[in-house]
Image (cartoon, rainbow, N blue to C red; front, side, top):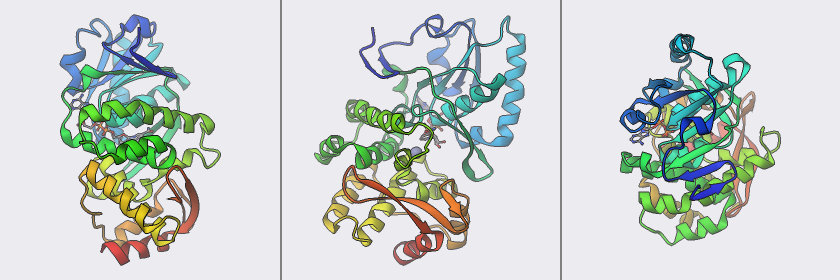
Amino acid sequence: MPSKKIKNVYFLEKLPSLNSICGSAFVICDQKLKSQIQNWCKGQKVYFVQAGERLKDLNQFALHTKNILKSISKAPQAPSAFIGVGGGSVTDFTGFFSSIYKRGKPVYYIPTTLLSAVDASHGGKTALNVSSVKNVLGTYHFPQKVFIIKHLFQGIKSSEVFSAYGELIKIALIHNISLYESLKQQSKPSFDHFWKVMPSAIKSKLELVEKDPFEKKSVRRFLNLGHTLGHCFESYHKIPHGRAVAMGTLFALHWSADKKFISSSLYSETQNLIKHYIKVSSILKIPLVRLKKLLRQDKKSISSGKIEFVFIKGIGKPFIKTVSIDDIVQFYKKYYL
Ligand SMILES: NC(=O)c1ccc[n+]([C@@H]2O[C@H](COP(=O)([O-])OP(=O)(O)OC[C@H]3O[C@@H](n4cnc5c(N)ncnc54)[C@H](O)[C@@H]3O)[C@@H](O)[C@H]2O)c1
Ligand SMILES: [Zn+2]
């Protein structure tokens, strides 16, 4: 019996047997988890990968695809589903692969980083990068089930815990006032604290996705808070995704305050919250020419020089406004260069 379940997300004490998940599974797993899963998947096809942005690179994808197809061809039967075990890079990769292999096979996720447990495993977005352009290729392919198993997280570093707070705080800001209020108590950022509040953040993400699964309305786009600048920091400085999102959120909050969408006291409260949990002291520098180029490549870029930017006008009150890339760059130049 699951200790907890939110929609298709199961919090379990131990890994469910492969047979109970699906008939014949093909597992794609972060090689760092090898020793923890090898008994669980004995006798099954498992493909180990090195996690990270390189795994999501299109050129690497072609090489991995050849290897996976070779491995599948040696098995007695073709896989009926794929299981991705790892952080967000592994779930994005496995999701993308399973969405196009034989025009799509079911996928299950077993996240092993807090960032993938709270965010990347949910919502059905899969993604690959092309050169430095993040997530430019992608599909919607919703996981059948997500299994979150505490003991698999025992090896994660504290820097990864801080980074995951980036997505958690983003969710609180756009859709979860009670989570925001509880974070305001400024508990010590830690694995245990994150674990306690994570289900509430997952529930919020699933609610937003359910209202707008294919991002046809603005609801799902609210999840992009902090990501316009965040992806630029991530690509240029090669910093973890959640940390980059936290910096992008600081920028969005500052701009929201500058435009008087939020008060200066709410700005300083939210800024302190992010700095407390993520240990981000300031927004990183990017040369303006590079920043413009990265912004033009952004998925939220809608037409020449325009971008859909997520602002907030209060906790739980995000909204989207079309701005020009020049406006973003001018604000960045004024305060951060
Ligand atoms: N699809 C989505 O909706 C979505 C949402 C948010 C983020 N993402 C993507 O997720 C990626 C970032 O996720 P991430 O930080 O989990 O990435 P990751 O998969 O690169 O993992 C980060 C590091 O943690 C290591 N790791 C994983 N599990 C571990 C464990 N249990 N113990 C020790 N080390 C472990 C990995 O080997 C890697 O070095 C980005 O590519 C981002 O674009 C996708
Ligand atoms: Zn994100």
